Image (cartoon, rainbow, N blue to C red; front, side, top):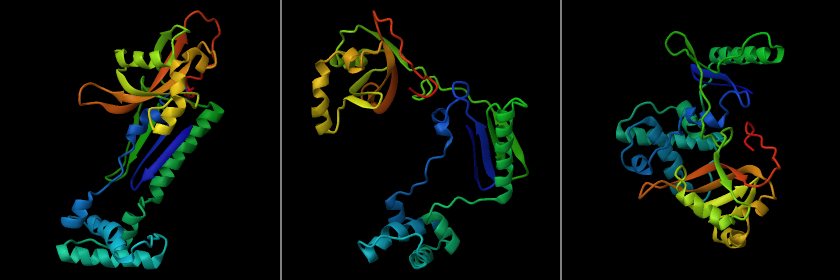
Length: 278
């Protein structure tokens, strides 16, 4: 896969080769977190033009219009938010509230620069040509472009995340065919690399056991006494995903883990697509 994107004067291009380069999930941390404003700041101590706009959009609109939902594509609704944001800004002595900024904040518009789009598009097209024609070595494997001050490009070679839920090998566990699902879950609590509690288990999209909601817990509770080997369709080696609370003491947090389960005394080998995420 060839991927590219721009934001203002910045952009990136990269290639993803299954099993060779990091997958999309490996580099999900590269995406910046979505900007959110605390409601207390919007209501009590606005400091920027964006605070005033969000106050008019999220708070003032509901106070005045009640159940009528805001339509960002309606010019009259957008004009109303702009007018209220302008009043709010004047009240607190804040500069910079404009109609275009109001549209950008409310609709989360990312500015597009034609020159940046052209550069990143060219980089993506070049990498596609390399892959299709095999005329040259492909990018290794992430290109960043910054045109804010002058022109700067850099190629970074990211590596695969060994704990990736998609392309990683997963934590290997070797079990007897007689081990029940309940005993398997108990082993996860004592496993040195996992230390999971309140575990839910899925296999190839099927819920083997779910801690919540209560209706699913009741529906899957009977599986706890059944051998995991049977629940997995008699497959000797396959991928299982578990979700639970990891950590020690008061520092536990919810997490998802990928396990590679092998059963002793079986010769059958399952078709496990490690690069594709199984």
